[in-house]
Amino acid sequence: MPSGEKNGETPSKTTVTVPKSVGNDSANVKADNSNKNIKAKYVIKSSGTVLLPNHDIPVPTKFNTTENVLDPFCDPEKPQKISFHDVTSAAFLIKDGVAKTPCPRSTSSDSYGMDLYLKKDFLQVTGSFKERGARYALLCLSEQQKKTGVISASLGNHAQALSYHGWKLNIPVIVVMPKAAPIMKIQKCRNYKATVIVDGNDMGEAKTIAMKMAQDKGMLYINGYDHPQIMAGQGTIGLEILEQVPNPDAVIIPVGGGGLIAGIATAIKALSPNTTVIGVESEKCPSFSQAMENNGPIHTPINNTLADGLAVPKVGYNAYVTALPLIDKMVVVKEEWIALAILRLVEEEKCVVEGAGASGLAAVLAGQLNELKGKKVVILLCGGNIDTTVFGRCLERGLAAEGRLVKFQAEVSDRPGGIYDLCRLLSHLGVSIKDIMHERAWLRDIYTVSVKVVCETRDWSHSMELKNELKKHYTNVEFSEEPMAILNNLAS
Ligand SMILES: Cc1ncc(COP(=O)(O)O)c(C=O)c1O
Image (cartoon, rainbow, N blue to C red; front, side):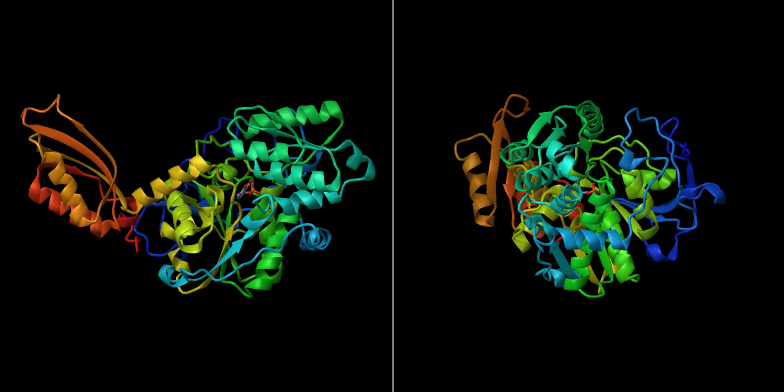
């Protein structure tokens, strides 16, 4: 059993010197406390964490597991690495059924200080890259398996991709989706004629249910991130990137169960070994980083995240052994940056991208990849399936993170015209009111009223102008704290 797996604890750490490649960040740098056990060096910043894999530690060739239903394609005792040849075979087979998506230069390259390219795989028919692996796995089935059909568990994107290509190829598909899966993704699978079962509190539970069902029905279970053909299919993105953006300095890839980065890194490192491969996770589901620290996949508690596509509690064994030697850096981002990235992609690139798909840009915005300034960088925008309600919330959070949505409270006169004067001041400053509420009962002075306002401004300096004017005119003004993007000196 990998160290730490028994009791679910991560190994203890102590402070060590900052490795040069991490840059000049003054934050804590930690690593495991004995030379022998060093797994990954990492830097903790207020904006998130950066981990550097220690490539001197051998990747285990065997793992123990307590899982009761085993998938023969993803056997922890015999983890399989995919090869470059697997990726090219996948590319050949799927070329007529999966779109080759564009990878244009970002219109905001200059403002990020990078020569930035965006690989728009959210433009696939079902809204994500998952079609690549799903179609390849379906095309590799035997004639009998094509008749019996396949089963899988997924938070949504793999389920949609499998349902869609199963429908197109006339192969029956059953998908088990956890209760937390976005409603829109569940409905889409039904539209693609799959049998959809909504069960399990998270991906882990949904997977157990689906695997048991596969056993009972004699159907093939296709793991959405760890099946070797799935990884090979996702790897075709790497081939396309290198064709569209020759010799990139770095490629940034979101990480959930690890299949996407495993496939892409296999292609990239075979053809362009000097390209840096960077993985990104949300702080709410850092299962690959935890696996790196543990020297093997380990169950990682998952919290609600904007990047629901990345919420996999344990990375795949095949994905881990394939990806780990090829990854140069793992970044764990805070959720606010993901919200801001979603907002920036809408405003600047006219792209609607879900949280998982936006997490690569989030790492850039958070300042966790500043060593890439001046370099040629590709960010993978791998999914666009975002619930409309979640999308609205993300945009609001993004605006708040940039200081363009602020709230304040001020005590104003309760005489006729008191609130009118406040509104006139806001109007004069060009500030737009989103919500306004006033209350009297708890104030000491019976001729005053406390007004709470949520409002939109142009930017943080406009918000500061508002704050100063309020302080000039009113007593007891409480104003929003300095937002995250401003603290990091990043707002444009
Ligand atoms: C939009 C999106 N991005 C990234 C990922 C991560 O892929 P993987 O689980 O293969 O690491 C997923 C997985 O579902 C996804 O849906």
